[in-house]
Length: 234
Image (cartoon, rainbow, N blue to C red):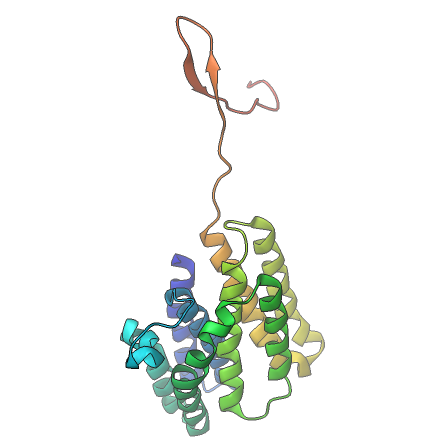
């Protein structure tokens, strides 16, 4: 998942740039960060059933404690931006997602089919449009990332059509707020989910295999069957 890992570093850099510039785009960058965090956690946590033991509830935290560093970095960036409300909302969302939301829903969401995951993904994005509490909205963005990862995992590996649809959805989500500014609250999580789906799908794209065929002569030999040229070379 090279593209997805690169997106985390780029996103943290953009958050720092937003904080230094003092723009109002910090909360939208944090929303995208929550979507990416949920996607990465579902991708890294390969369990589909509960593990045994008393520490099962926080097994995803014990699996990769360093994964919590982007949460802390985002809180620090919000403090640098002199936005204590965003910092508190992000810290609340981080604790809620890591200690309550994901452990409670990991097994339930893991049993979903791809169609159900898509419906859940659309519903989560729609609910974010009517949620006024920033911490809850960030938590819903985190779940949006989890649902996006399940949608990708349940689909075919290396599906170029899915990548194309995700890229079109990302472009539409970016340009829609230009025409209808109130839809920005829906466009940010939708664009983030489509971007994650496109990056994950492109990371697994494979070249179509070229067939081999036998060639006559002294003995049966295998020769790569290259497609014919459209015209004779000059």
